[in-house]
Amino acid sequence: MNLLIVDDEAVALQALRKAVKWPEYGICGAVYEARDSSEAMEVLSSKEVDILLCDIEMPGDSGIELVMKMREAGTDISIVFMTCHAKFEYAHEALRLGCDDYILTPASYSDIAEAVSKAAQKLKASREGKQMQRYGEQWLHEKKELIQSERVALTNAEIADDICAYVLANLSDSKLSVKQLAERHFLHEDYVTRIFKREKGISIKRFIINERMELAKRLLD
Image 1: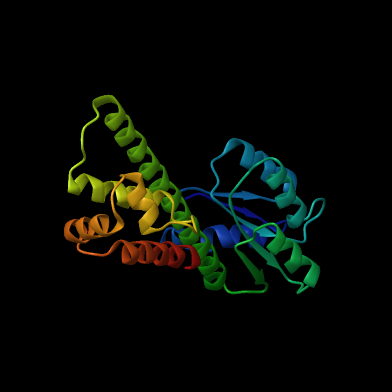
Image 2 (image 1 turned 90 degrees about the horizontal axis):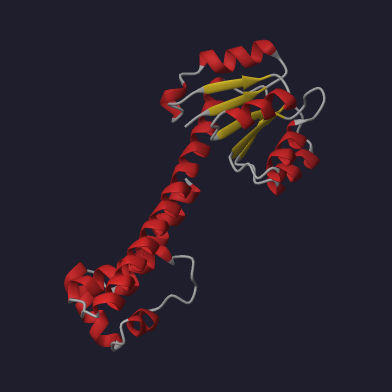
């Protein structure tokens, strides 16, 4: 992941960039820097940036205004704000803009780095979840095309695999149920439940619960 640090104080900027061993905190790519909002926008327009570590109080546009411009431009990256003023307005705007963390300075380098690390872990989990969903959707699409083109009957193992893929692609669906999964294959709920338990060693309901808990755990870390 790549990090962009934005701070109008040159000493603080250089110290953050060089004093922290960023790879130890999940930032194994580039660490860019900018002195103000305009420099930050130039970096964002020309470089791949995953996480923004940004001071709020800066000459010209504030960190809040910078992130508002980013959101308007469709730039979707993780945000960690830094500020020396515990203002409610700042905190409120930070939350509204989807900020991952809000650090009151002065703070230790390790505290700042830990906040960035948590944002990186959360971003990674979110991307993995989306990727898993895309894989599930692709698998379902390919299997559907196979069925339609060859009209072959699925084996019990293939039915269980299909259920797994469908669940992973639709974890956010509150209506996801054994009945819904059985109807996809025009089979009885009890039969689908039995073959899934036999093939996967776990019930469908428990599989759904486990996957939802795992996704929630990753997103909350």
